[in-house]
Image (tube, rainbow, N blue to C red; front, side, top):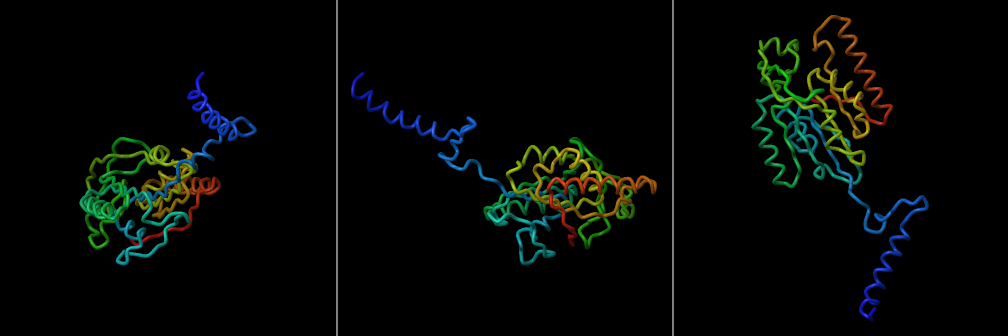
Amino acid sequence: MGPHSRNTIFPVALIVSALFFFVTYDGTSDVRAWWGSGPKPRFIFVDLGANRADSLQVFMQHPEAKFKYDYPRPEWASYKNAEIYLFEANPVFNTALVQAKEHYDALGVKVNIFPSTVVDITDGTRTFFLDTVNTVTDFWGSSIYATHPDVVLSQSKGTELTAVNLARWLLMNTLPRDFVVVKMDVEGAEYELVPHLAEMSTWSVIDYLLVEWHGAEIGGGTPEEIKYREMKADAAGKRMVQEGVQMPPYNSAA
């Protein structure tokens, strides 16, 4: 072995010794303490029932937003640092969502849109009934339920749209280390979605769940069926809170 080989081995030995030093008493490696702190958490805002991106304007604290609300955020991130996901079923708002994405992308804000998409408890398709009478309030009565009063007034026949399993999507696209805020304004579908979120243990990835409750009677059925939906959703909400999810009262003007 020549001098050159010895000169090469010496620094390698130092590196090996350093790595050994960062092994903890239980035998697990803590090399991250040397190389860095590992992947950073993300600030994620999931807007269910995004309309024409009204809630996004509120989230971004735009001065001309329809209403004022301070959405939860972590101390280590600003609103413009968030990854934003907008889900909206009503095809009327497709163009507005594309324009919102284009606008905020130009500002360096990560906006992902899911136009003409129903958030559901399964993947596939779902019939969606359009509100065509509430022009002033941006057709806010559109719903998965043909029994919704505004849908009835609109005499809506329904249209088939892509459906996304919300619980599965959250579990696939977020992590426990992330700060995840889910806003839900879905005209009665919350009575299906919240129980499913609880059944799928999505409390592991959700920090805040902001639900605008619309009344279980929107889904139709007998008084007993309506009462059962209310009780099931209430129990699911309580379970989510018990598991650490924050669910403060939420009501928007959008």
